[in-house]
Image (cartoon, rainbow, N blue to C red):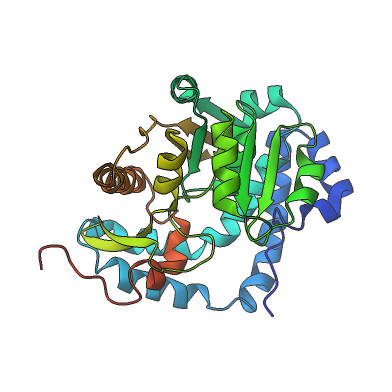
Length: 314
């Protein structure tokens, strides 16, 4: 079984004393120390990693080349960037978690937050807010960052949520709900109808399926099987959807943005329109920066219908 990278959010609670020492050094020095340790560990991690970086780069390049909307000249760089994305996501998300207890340090020295007016607009409807963090950049940290601005209940799968919260943000108003522990849809609707914030990732069904609850949507000149769950929840509760994006801005610096809310659908036709609107937004956000920093490339065989993508108009 492959080892995890040296720094992962899931393992961090087991090394609390180590991370306290990093916190004491401040963000700039902590980033340097973590980066040096990561560089020392990287050869050992890569030696047992499957697929290898080279294999993952080759597979991702071949798939990206089938998507007409991707700029061809950037594909080699972005495919190589994606091959390093998994460990980098964990490294950066772990780093952000170090500062969640200290709002001043977090937002003065680590994260630039913007778009809070969009959150206020979404909350003003009084029907709850369906928070949709995109799988871009160190996305795992987007949920507790959002909880600094509004209490959040989030759906998760295969994650030691309670341990991570106790270690990184025990006083933050963020709750987790394990997939399968209850009826997720009904619990989400309950939270939203109370006027609160419920969070889920929109690009892939958390059950890791592509069943009848998915529909084809144009994406990057091809099509994806998009889960309709977020749209259906928004309609059931009458709650606006609020996308958020967390991006790397430089060594130890990150940009966190609330984007403009999407109105809840009122009809079947509205549902189709909102799903298309959401995936147009995901495509826009991918192409505005490093499209290799999208976690769903790990699952392209599944979300692109498990086959070579059918080109729109071909």
